[in-house]
Image 1: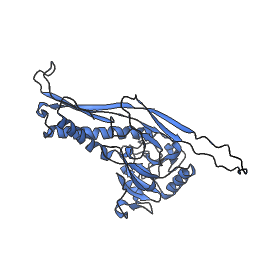
Image 2 (image 1 turned 30 degrees about the horizontal axis):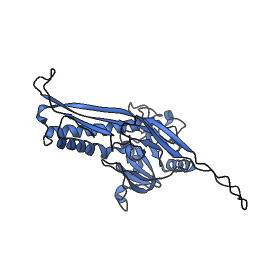
Image 3 (image 1 turned 180 degrees about the vertical axis):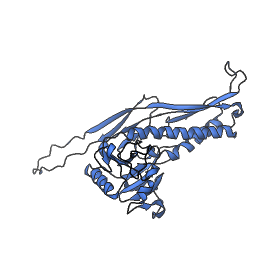
Image 4 (image 1 turned 90 degrees about the vertical axis):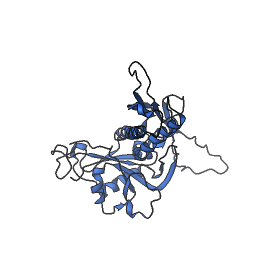
Length: 325
């Protein structure tokens, strides 16, 4: 975190306030493999996965040492990019964090930072190549809702590729850490699909969970091996499906098609909205300059570097469905 032209007291306030408002709704930042952006180490982040060994099916010969194996690895690199924005604030700030103008602007910018990171991640993850359709063989045929049968097929497809259940997620807070959750595949989808999810026969809402321990931020319920989380940044493809029937449609002709992103462990990597150098706040008191001769305007803004990268397409899957109107 960094700020400029203000006291340390106000610097700490602005940093803390922005993250407080940003982190809780950073939905897609919870499930990726984490890589922090090292200070002064360039813009390329490396994610590494060690590959499994083939089964050792050759019998050992008595007294003969086997050849042995050498571990191999897969490295995937991604380049972080900077994002940010600022707003003008009136001269009433005067380097005092009690002033509501600073508080309100920091809150709004924190929400914008969260939205920015989550929208970027949603766009990258929606582009995965592993896909299943609620009906038909391509998007322009989709006009039916999610069902238990589809979920069973998704479960089978992921397990066949040896995708592992998520057992921990990124913990919300200014420091990067994780906390455990019960093993499951996590499904992230738009709120428009909530009604159809609740119609699944074995649906269990979070209110009926035996315990709230390990509850995921944004979670609404579960079905079998799947836990469901809402994120409205996973927007539908308007009129992307087949004849709308009783489905939601932007123009009233074709069904809108909604992505449901299903994640296993280490399916994708992120530089998260937390930790050293991930996001910085900047607050400047008004100064008398040519464009502001009587020091009426200051600024407050944020800047952050992030990236999202799919690490293994076969450990995640996009279900494309319609939503009941």
